[in-house]
Amino acid sequence: MAEDNAPTRSLRLGVAGPVGTGKSSLIATVCRALADELRLGVITNDIYTDEDARFLRSAGVLDPERIRAVETGACPHTAIRDDITTNLIAVEDLERDFAPLDVVLIESGGDNLTATFSPALVDAQIFVLDVAGGGDVARKGGPGIGRADLLVVNKTDLAPYVGVDVQLMVADGLAARDGRPVLALSRDDKDSVAALRAWVLSILAAHRAGTHVPQDPGPMAPHFHAGDGDDESDHAHGHDGHDHGHDDHDHHHDHAQERAHG
Amino acid sequence: MNTSDRLPRFQGMTVPAASTVAMLLADARLPSGGHAHSSGLEPALIGGMSPAVVAGFLALRASTTALVDAGTAVATMHSVLDGGERDGWGLAMVERAWSARTPSRAMREVSRDLGRGLLRLARRIWPASAGIDALDDAPPRPLVLGVIAAEVGMGSEELVRLAVYDDLASGVAALLKLEPRDPADGVMLLLESCASIEPSVPTIAAIRSPDDIPALSAPQAEAWAEQHAITQRRLFRG
Image 1 (cartoon, one colour):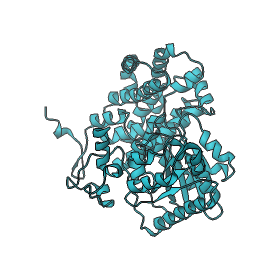
Image 2 (cartoon, chains in turn red, blue):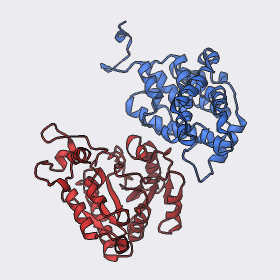
Image 3 (cartoon, rainbow over the protein chains, first blue to last red):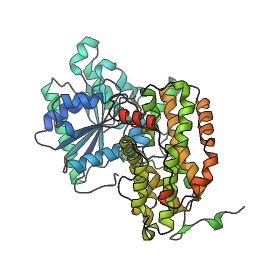
Image 4 (cartoon, helix red, strand yellow):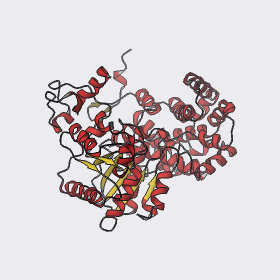
């Protein structure tokens, strides 16, 4: 969906999720795992500062000049969805200045469960939760949890200290996602980092092969009902809307129901 | 009144009225990157200006920087419409005149950021516009407003008010995030500061040559803008 298909066009990979779930840390992990074989760039969307950009620069995982921060005017969700201009320009500048880049990672400003990237800005997106934010969050659903290309349950090493059952949280995520992948991650768990690395490489390969179609997880769900129309995301996700249990709803319905029952 | 007869036509397609485009460009929801800007207000507040004098700040902005931009937009429009290139006051001359009247480098860069976002959108809307096509990738905001105005046949007074309103409205929107208050107070501030330049509107709207763009500097605001460009704690780009 993005307009520019010049030869320097990278895979633009968004990383969204609530504040403090480890988005910057995940990006640092991806850089550490892939910087030797891929040409990477990073855009951060901080709210008050360029703290995230500075954290990533100081992490030493990437040439500091390849990490740039943009301002969001206190509207992090606007900057990745309603008005993506500033981010698009930052990505294009980075792609131009360091051409060719393989992947540009765009970190959203920490927002809430409803903030997801527009497919006009990113080709694929990761939504990050963490165990310390509560074991029930994956069950709460929302566009990022339900329909991001990858859901990460981060900081699994903390699970014993916060009384969270990682396997249950992952199972909740899987139930909410119609089979889309969920990854339990700890930066100290080599196997999980390897799985993250493999996922990024697989998306990059699909992007290059033209087989990956950017999906819009959607903003707040349009309160769609099966058979009402031709909503694109509905087709893409094979929505049936009939046979889900109440707790594992993953589609447009569940928001309406949450409100009705909440 | 049936206004459809006056609508410009493009390749057989109906195009929006100039007033509709003016409203579009003044709309804070326009996806052109404006939401990350405060029209100098955050630089001023971080620089130590008391929130109690925001009305004065906006009035000063209206009568200085905003009028330079408005005059530049009008000169740009005429450069496109009147064949200014031929007469030696083409877009490059307009841009030079604007730069000479915008002494703060930080302010020029902020304006180019805004211009770039706006131009990106304008190219999508008017892909065949010669005036829009004539701009570089990151022109100052008033040049982009001017070429769009030329494209859609906007009146020069409407263009002046648009250039001023859009600038001040960004500041007022930012104010609600920086120094929260009743949003209705912000609306009053905006209307008052826009009204304050009404006596100048005919003069600015009558500009043809870039030489006639007024040189209205605001040294304290420029100093704040320079400082803001290097701060690490800010919500807004400028």
